[in-house]
Image (tube, rainbow, N blue to C red; front, side, top):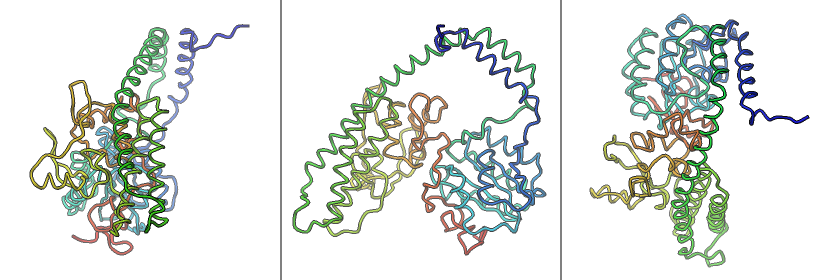
Length: 457
């Protein structure tokens, strides 16, 4: 008997689709869990892990022992507002006796999502945020603006209103979409099944056409990226050629030789990764290797010159080929807002003198443009250099930043570039970069000793 693949037979594809819709009918009629408050069924005060698990499913969590502070209806309203805004704002309402030592850092680690975290604990309130989402100064000002409000509903509503206007980033996909209805009726699902059956064959054809179009666009994007990445690889190779270092030279030690070896390995890794790249998102591994190699050369130079070893910093924003940045400088892109960007020593001097930095320009549909104004294909390239949540804050208001914020971006160019799509870092984040009102850098509340929640101004 000849087996006909459903992928090649539109009628089988439609039948499977209708069966899938009908299979969902019992679930549609079943009672739904109320995720408005994210309340755990645990009678005792839940652990940080339990709170984090609830926040991954819903932006608002109300501890059962603190339910008198915020009603279910008010919590649901906050949840819908945050979901509708699509921002990674997490709110937890906890009882006064909840342990506060390292609470923000532990909660951020357990949740694993780059965002802003606000906690009402008894009658006290504080917040922390990743700097890529909300600056430390902004968090401080927002907390100060609502700290005097004693009513939890008013305080949290005001904080949410103001934070959503100022913060960047996007909500994690695990939140789903805002719930504007009370569930989906069986009649609606049956109707949807009929409609799907009627238009299934046409939809199947459209899907295949869209897949071919997307594949062609990805190939074109990768071809454009190859030019830029090859320039980067060549530039790094030239740096290695100019390097006046020999592992056996007088004064060379094991640390220097290890730095040199890592730089050589990064060069080979970048070449191999680019040769194997088949999609635009594969380019991120290439630029990650180049960034690592340049940092190894910076370490080697410091050791040879007897200088303190440099801290690991992002490369120069204006052109990653300039090497690791030495500090941050204020810069305003054309038509955009002012922001802090990492800069190399040469560009820092140029900006301080009132001159323009040396900007990396690439080919685009509009001629040579700065890479942040050249189109979506350069997202993976930039993401390899500026990963770990750094990229969103740098690109806010630019063409590339706006494109990366669209839902279709990840489908066409890959996800995971520290972009705006609910960046999940897990525990790999700098607690010193997760700040707010106090000086604890995301440790205990208010930066005080072991439970100093919102410890003064």
